[in-house]
Length: 487
Image (cartoon, rainbow, N blue to C red):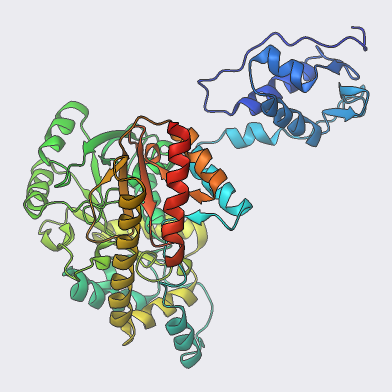
């Protein structure tokens, strides 16, 4: 091949693939180089020319070339174009591992592209008004109380590996907490401490289910945002959420058709809709599950945020047959950074999951577990909950008022009575990606509804993360983005 002749790439990327276009392009060029089709010194097409050949944006080719340059496979010089590296491909080629092939491989899938894009946007620009992150702001967390508590009760215990089920004083404190606040009666031997709800769900999907198993989840659902379900090889089937929550009779139909093996549900101030499962349906759900012999995984992170202080009773409090695995967390009621969650389950299940978790990390740090135990026991916990409910309701009202003022005809929603989220339907047809990117450009970020399995045109606003003074401004920025996309 003439070294001065520009090589021609007759190939098209697969737009239906889960692999990004620029990774496909980089892998294809590297493959052809390794096969000797493009010898060392071969001149590659310009970024613009290759973009035209492949029918992609020039920015996509730029990213592909950057990947190959980083690996030393190609090199670019001003005035000489982009060529296959002569130093990289010697008589006896020496290869840097193609880490992207490894990254794109494996069984544990990456986060959804929107979630990665949200994280990248927030890391790049800290001034963005954040309606996306599902956690409490520093204004809502009991930072001062915990700091004082730590000074008054310094940690003096041995810092060794702890009980694989979790710090015993925390599990004992949770027995009282669950009885007092959620009417759940249990013992410390039936409690497993985790790093939060996601680790609880991960352990369940990995240890209690097998690839190919069918499970039922709400629609829309936070579970759709967790690729861990797909990574475990599970088949997901939907339970539509209405204003009263799921219809338990839908479970019978799914069981008959797909032989579902487990039900995942967030019945109180559901993420993302904020809906509470109707009390009658809670009883009906337990009846259906017990009739079919199906376990229920109840995720209950938001119940204590109930603005009137009277959340519905959890399924677990009504469970007389041991059908419900109950998951809770400190993240939505105190501090996500403590990384403390819990699971209440039959002791045999707790032992199985504790053994698996020990293989992962030899157990959680004792320090945050002791902090959590002390805070739950302290006189500060109940006043913190009362302040949290009051401030969350105020933030919700700010968000609702701003949306009704800025977009009275373009957006609709049901006002939640607890939780951190407002689930909205955009009434005009709109392209999710265009709206999201336009909002980021204008300084605000949110979560598109498709992340939760919803159709285009839904969004989730989280009002616990932005500062109170940012909420009205953030809605104005969002409204401007929506109007720009619709015009």
